[in-house]
Length: 122
Image (cartoon, rainbow, N blue to C red):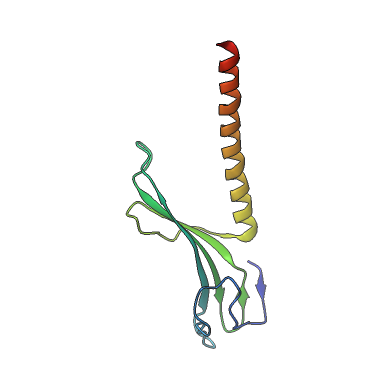
């Protein structure tokens, strides 16, 4: 994980915590800048999942000596409460988003071309 040595106590522009929230102690645990980007209610898909929620968060861990790079975390829970799952670096999150977009595009393009083929045969 990429780190910076200079600890900046100012919140990054995306942080949704109140100013001055960061409390880190020398030789103690760090603290987090956080932002809740989205909470998406997902409907049930029979046979695959019940109703659930997907939380998208930005988090950045800061200690007394190090500011770590921000990460994107996705939380998914069947009880409607977002759960912490894997945190992704910005590059990893971008790669995942691109792959999902390619998947959606592939399926939609297949449906569109399949409909045109069906119309041509009918």
